[in-house]
Length: 118
Image (tube, rainbow, N blue to C red; front, side, top):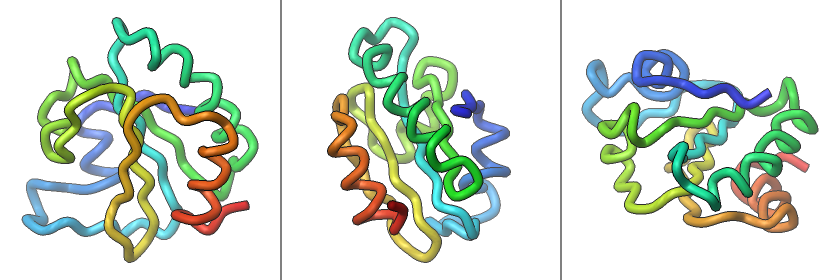
C-alpha cells in the first residue's frame, strides 16, 4: 500500500534533517518516495504504477507519496522542480531521482538496478 506522508513521518521513516546535517539513509529496507500534487494530471496517471509496485513488493519495499504543496520543505530538500518526481532510496546509497511518469517497465528496471529488487 502506498502511504501519503507528511514532514513528521518523513523525519521518522526516511531522514531526520533536524538531527543530521548530511544525508543519511539508515533504514534497512529500500524505499520509494514519490513527490506529487493533487492538481497534477501526470501524477494521477502514475499513481496506479506506484500502487502496483507497493502491492507486488510488500514486505521488501516501502512506497510513500508526499504532496509538494503540503510539505514544500521536503521537496526543496531534494531539489524537486516538477511533479511527479520519484526518489529511490537504498541503504548505504545516495538517492536516485527520476522525473516524470515512469512506465511500468522503467519502474521494474529501476527497482532491479537501483534497489536490487526483482
